[in-house]
Length: 127
Figure 1 (cartoon, rainbow, N blue to C red):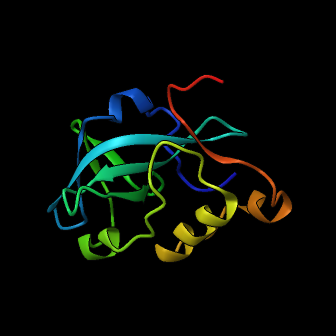
Figure 2 (figure 1 turned 120 degrees about the horizontal axis):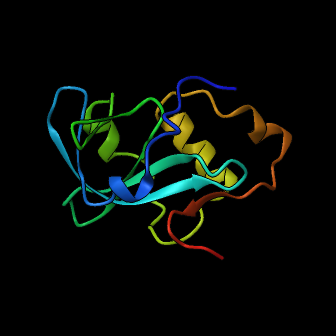
């Protein structure tokens, strides 16, 4: 079990909410939420930054959902320079690993034990 993932976050409540960086500067609006396929826990959010209308992926752990906004504890410049994988499809394990490295986070322990595991199923898309 890793850390303090807010498993009580309803991914549908996040979509359309404003996201802010560690200093309280607005990053953008949550576009999509990605769930871990194995656990169903919300893991990543794609935030529409308005910068060339690209989405930046932000980790939901250690972010917090406070007063109907997503607080992401990273600098806006780091968030905006996150790898851009496009939205609307799965994140591969390799892409997720790149995101973990970008944010300087420990990758989930299951990433090494299951390299073919799918991450990032879109919330609200039942297959």
